[in-house]
Length: 419
Image (tube, rainbow, N blue to C red):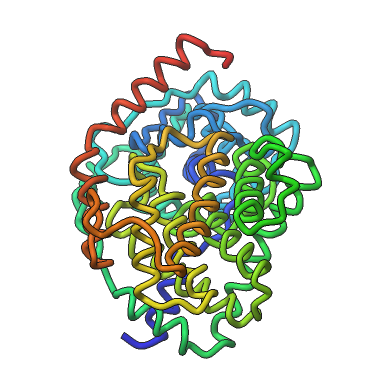
């Protein structure tokens, strides 16, 4: 495959999003429904797949001082911009938030048990109309807009079809080394967007929510990577109204991927060209890994996907090759392959910080010839088989894990509604 193909793959995997991607996707869906329905709203029913529901339960919403899936839906109706994609909540006014708090009393939220992939469905009923909008497969993919009577939606099977596992680590490295530099400048813009979130978070003193003073005052690469990625993640999960450049549908993965490699580039004082090429290699690795574990899963992809990919990018910065990248990957998966995803919230920042720190540690250890042996556990001496093992672990071995996580989270919300 030529470099244009890989370039387009990277571009397609990146998109700006204001706030966490799950509330943004819900708001976009609801805003689209409101834009297509006539009359005053009488009832709203939102149905979500379990993974997306989990991630929207307790995370901060841009422009809102409260949380919850029903508020995401209502805010999409009162304030959502249906033409803004994942920036649907880029401007939320006080009166729109107040209206959403009243409207959410008309919202019913259900888990779409039949959904086999990312799925959002909002049905708005008025005195004169009824409209249903369906998002399927990707956060911003509006698959259907229809007025009642509705036809059955049967594309779930297509969503669950195995994604194409394209490319190899060697191809990703070759692309990153040889792609004309002027064609990679969009990665600079993506990085700058995520830097802005980090700078704002530092201005607002949010770093202390993620790291102790001992590490905040530490100038090492390990500490800087944790601070940059973790602090930016906390700000995003808290609901800061700034866009983040997502990677493969996740803002936290975009922050982990870009800011970890950026921290290493600053420490090693490498050229911008080398930084952009390292980001290109890391981005392709991230796309490849996510094709095995899916857009949403039971494990924290900040560790096993973007963290692992960032480690590959750091090895690239340091002049390492495929051998060292494979060893860095083993160092990651030998450490955090079982780290669960229990929904989006500020606590994700700790996982992002952990992933960023481990990424640079794993890369440096690999460059020194050290790390976890290929014969350990689920690891392997082949990058392809290593990621295949991860996919099997997540999609087969942990198939019911998400149900358990959602059950516990819902029970806790009922038992401690104000927590």
